[in-house]
Figure 1 (cartoon, helix red, strand yellow):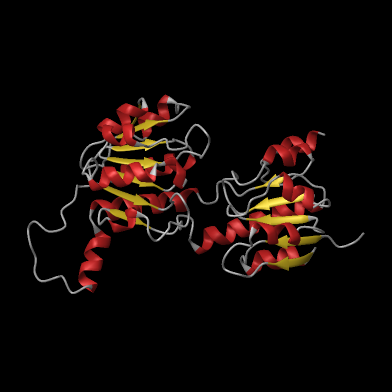
Figure 2 (tube, one colour):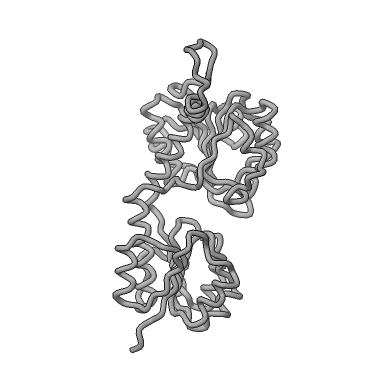
Length: 327
């Protein structure tokens, strides 16, 4: 049986590369930036397997360009860049990496919450710029975190991990999700289920943890931001387009809310002329919520396991569309 051909759209951990190379003929895209779409079309022409990232568009046209493709594996929890319905129609399993980054992402979301509330970035930049002249009772003031009400939009795995972290700060929690958590879980983590408008109105901190869908696109826009407290802190470690960036800029500029801290943006990466970058009360980091060594290593090896299972005709350990195995 011929050795399967695989294209890997970005450099990953060597351990995962070794796993794949032991069973397949690998071509690796080693540039820091993702391959342009037209290049990707060429690279997949003769491949049996594709390992991709969120930045790679995997649509029907690309699948047409890859007639031998029988395994798609993505290093991410999300998969909105992949036409999963089309892959399913063609009998191609699609792998992803759920669960492994839950705690790591919640760590970052809570770190962003703390950094925005206590104005850590502003303070650090002031020191480097030589602006620290003296201690002053009115400089760099922000809200207390302990005892503040935490609003969580999206009580999935990461949302629940945020709730766990909030317990150490004695934070009551309001949350909204399309599915309500069992009452014993709500009691355990001091959580109260409420409509989204109530969560926004009553929370001192709002942390967004919803998936990106047509229903959640610009879930937070002008109306929602006007509902929030004037000193509220908004955190987004989910997907950039969940928050309307133009509306967020106006809300921060005009003092409708106090602070924002973003791990993700729309577009991504953010353009250097984006007005959000001019605001002292907005922290933006480059989509690094899962960027711990153990987490990214496990994501890479999970993606390798999914890819190889698909190539070998075995069920992927983590498959977006397991219905392909029913055909």
